[in-house]
Image (cartoon, rainbow, N blue to C red; front, top):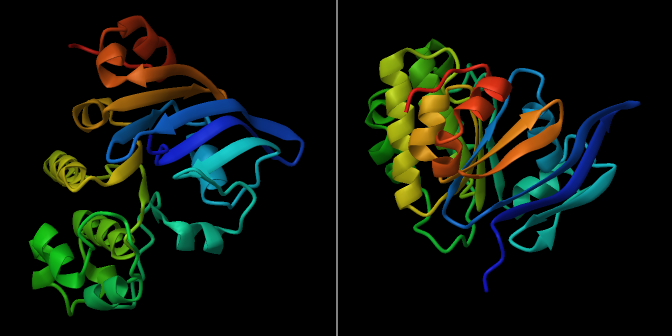
Length: 241
């Protein structure tokens, strides 16, 4: 039986003496999308920081395709195959679109068709049109496309998307959703941190809800959609099915 793409078991993390993550456990099946949900301050960003090695867990295990990665450096974790699209995009504004993509290129055996410059341009035709344009002059939506494309150029085994719809117009949010759905057809394993519940439920197979650093729900998105009280209590949203 193939191991999970990503697995967290009883992960505890601290900032100084402040206990932020309290025994977080979840599994990401290969080729699936898991939505990591919660209010601001619930622990989502800390969870992402712990996965990518910016924060060392005090207790617990993190495994990438069965291999332990907890405590490794962020550089080592990235080389092993975890890609990040950070909150706020953080593209290189003084480089062109093409340079942003090429600088991130890595060859890696992922079991799927590798991402190349041409494939990124096929996924995001607007980036092809703007390939010589400085990234800092792109619109917010185009910068988000570039941030996703840059992460894919590393051919990650697991892709972490941190608030990809933040600050974007509804039409661009819908485009982000279509992109994630397309990546699912490519068998890309994804952890999606998202405040937009509709987007998350539309594209994710499973979900985890964090509240004050604790997991209060782990299950399928179908199960979550049936639990209006849980959504209202932990996300502050009155969900209409």
